[in-house]
Image (cartoon, rainbow, N blue to C red; front, side, top):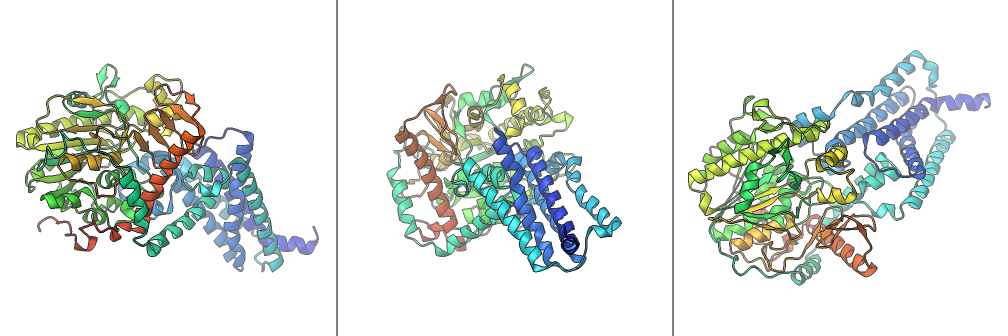
Length: 640
């Protein structure tokens, strides 16, 4: 290399070194920190190359700074990218998903995530930042490593031309591996595998910008297609049950992180859910009921249950669109004289609930300031469930009747820790601490619900109240498949098993019901709203909702997951593939092309139409929406 060129190169050398370190670090963390399915050498080559272009491009911005600032900016960019990488590793550790910008910027939740982050964080996280310290020391000890002279334009051009060339090669290989990759925004894992984490974050930014403009350009004409679709797919109500419980109270209990595989299961000969096992015998139990949440998890479940709309594919409606117009259950029940309240012993701003609940029409939000919370009665995420229900009962008894109320439990939340005196069952012994502890917190929640039901009976509310219990989302992610296989007595967890594990309990107990019934029709959280309203005699024929009354004699067996996967009476379908599984045997089956296309198109259509409602805030144009956000009474605070 000629002396002059060598001297010029020395001016970009440190920036290039930082970019290469970021590239290799990102590849290693992506490979180790995320459970990506790499099946071939070609896929691994793409995974290796994918972070290179973005690392060169982003760190390369330092070249536009003069003198020693150039090196400082390069290290600062390294730090920012490492923080994004670290945040994704922590988020993925529990949710088995990558952070999107709406979630990343939801900083109001961060203060309440302490126990979960503490469980996921380890010394490995700190090692992710070690290279920054090492590079800084090298720069100080060997100043000749970087020439701080001006970087000429031709050298910048050459640097970014190489970056563009790498990006083009990467995109070409990615398209060979996964055609139409950039149209698959719902498949975050595929984008990260093929284009790298930083490109994915940039792509997510473009999606966020796009969706932010949809509301501005939306008009009432966009509702027509949605109304036609919903009206065409309506079902008859159950003549015997419609309106039979008009004027009765409703209590909806969110069973935090509870999956159906725990119902009826035993550990060391002891039942995990002894109370619910018995309660099912005097209630309606839906054993093929699936959660349909996205990144919003518990808040998504709340949104689905109250609105019979799908959650978004990115972020959480509670945070991104809390000021939209909706037609939630609390609003619709106002015409029937119902008072509505939420009971949740958490910070009122968590998941932006203090903004979202008035939008949905709730009259009162009992949050952490309404409860006596101390070190003795709290664990993990906050107030223990038994104390929560015990303190909630007198508050519930004060409500004007009839009421529609929601209770959100906390104790069965990751990382599933309990005080020794609250462990009614021994831990499982898989060696996976998360699953092993999980059975003890489910057992504790079961006991707390037993005490709550006993309290309702003692208060006189029980026989005048519809009680609905539902699992809000999975508790055990794919990261624990080995332990789950051991628990279920299987050799491995297949994609079929994974979909089957998305079943969560749904229990509906009707006033003075004595005999229970297990109903095995395919159902999802989106079906709960019309089911409750029809029991109370509320006609929903003119409402826009995607769920169907679970007691309807012609309830369709078709449940869509947020990623486009779905379940029918015959099949499990895994989104982004051509793979169908027999719902009963788990074997892969061939489905005729016409039937396959029809089912896949139906799932996509429902998700798209629901997204259009949320992104476009279309209910503001809906003539049947009587209660606008601006006219909604704000939630009553304590002492008011």
